[in-house]
Image 1 (cartoon, rainbow, N blue to C red):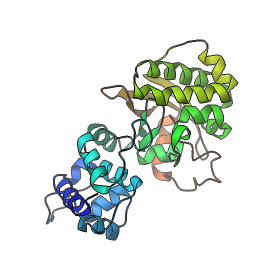
Image 2 (spheres, one colour):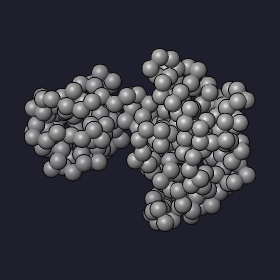
Image 3 (cartoon, rainbow, N blue to C red):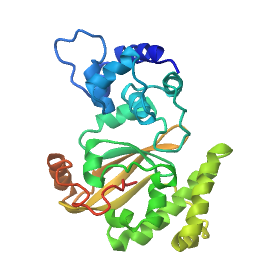
Image 4 (cartoon, rainbow, N blue to C red):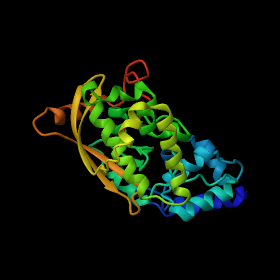
Length: 291
């Protein structure tokens, strides 16, 4: 751990980023070449005073804050690992909620301001969401381990299914299992251990999953049409489109309205409603992010 060097490193990464690179307005009068401290704090979900302490080398970021800083500063994988080493935190394994998100994928997510979008892993762990995705699906849960995977929650927690009409559940179950089998086939070595453990747990806990898994069906989810149940808007018909990362381990999902269904007007209204009145009491299972 070297908190003094961490502060220097954070400042150097902050200086290289323009506000427009992360979806922030530039403004006519800027005394710094990159982001201001308060802007990094905003992007990382931290207080300005706390972030100042980090740059001074007088505070050690938590593992969660290290994840937030790496994403806010658009660090590549080597820079992310360096940040963890300086902060005295273990580098998180790939596949979980703390997985590194490619800066280019984050940049594209920032530019999708008028449609719900989020980045997930091939095991359907939600990594980051834009504002409209949170408003439509609910925020990603603070889960770790297998519970971070939406597929795992789909087959073990009935509340996870509240996002879909009941009549759509069988098809979604089949799609999740067929996509999961395809994802696992692309993994090997240690990367496969996590996926195999997920499957083993689901085979033990869910008869529905077991029956579908034994069919050996394969179907990579490149695009789909879905009906999402929203507590204020009702059923929203969307097209789910997918952009895969280079190794297929991460996916950017964005959701466009299905023509002729009224979904365009619903999504326009969603941008106004935002996340107001969408606490745990408003949407059963709202803490279960969608994939």
